[in-house]
Image (cartoon, rainbow, N blue to C red; front, side, top):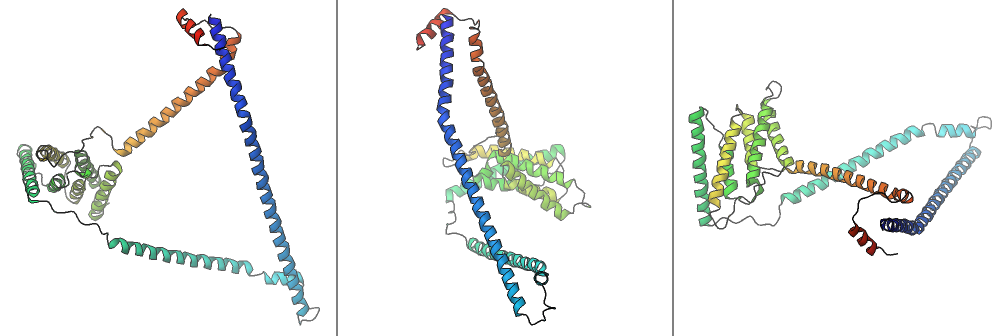
Length: 365
């Protein structure tokens, strides 16, 4: 019974292979005919272009010889002093390469100037058009109840943050003076509640990136990097890193420029992050009291920044494609080795009688 099942498997596999070969025969023949036709047409076009080029060259040579002969006949010089055709051609083409190069250089310079002029005009027109702005109306002002809610919420959050800063100064003996990013965070939380820059993920990551980047750049001495360049470099580096990692937070940029412009230490970064955590917690409690607001829109601390996510996704895709390729290679090798073991007889595979009966019933001769 097991022998019949393996014979059926061998016959099905053979029929599949024969059918695949027969099905691919006609398309392969058509592909060969199409390639031959395309090659013939390409060679025909090349031959036609070469014939045209040779015809133009011959006509130009004949015309040059005729002009030289007519000039030689009409010349008033004595017969002995008349220049030959080779001399006339050499004197005529003596300075032509240099003049040709000069003309080409002038043409290129003029065309470049024209392109630059047109680009400047186009950019200036576009800049003037964009500077006039659009017809979009500015956002409306908040009603009086919402304004009062914003005032009370920011006031309570800042009281909590000030108490935290005073506690740090009493127990640690360090006075934290950089409160401007936390004030900007109040405006983001209570006015631009749904903005991505106001969310906890952007707040903590943006402040950390701005502070660490600025303090690393301030380690360069002013003799090597002047202060004016250091401030600009630290701030723009923080902006670029936040944009690359997808955690834009404008108060974090203010924190970066503050650290880069003065004498500050590494302890300022954890203090600001602690104040940011208090602002997030207080904002979560106060803002959600209002029925019209929700904060935060997302936490997403477990998600990596977008740049790291893209890198990990590419690595996973390459690993998956490699596994799929290896699987197909193994399947092909198994299908190629099928006739060999069928010729030598069925292999000894343990199989119960119920499975063999089921396979026999499903077999169609």
